[in-house]
Image (cartoon, rainbow, N blue to C red; front, side, top):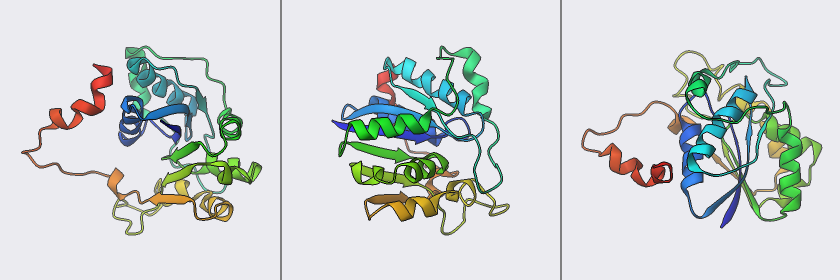
Length: 211
């Protein structure tokens, strides 16, 4: 079973919720922690707890950085938090506890934790700047960031990808010795699905843990 630490910004686009649902449903994954970032990171932590409760799993959840350090804030709110009154969820999350939590988990499990980051990179940049040895203690690091074609950004390049997610890419790159996998962000944008695809069957296995 692989230990996974998830850093994400649930509450703006659907990809984060699907990623968390998949990890909660995957029998080969031990989700050792969840951290959030971007505007209203505490509300994002509450949204993460909705899925954890639905899956019947207790996973440590910590709110992280709400604002980028070097660039303008492009994601100030968590619009999907509007669903919170309709679902059971945890409350009382303290602000800015994500980074010390991540450091603790990685150091207590050297060589065992896979860090999956699908949020702006501020949490990770500060984490690795504070403790430069951490990347070498990871089992793996997977990032969702960057869009070389900019096909997602039909208005301006000042997007979540081009701006916030690159906030601390330089710090990340300077701390890693090749043990990093980066996935471009284009797949997170709008897509079309063929009419003959059975959506219920596609998601049946993914969400069976919530049935």
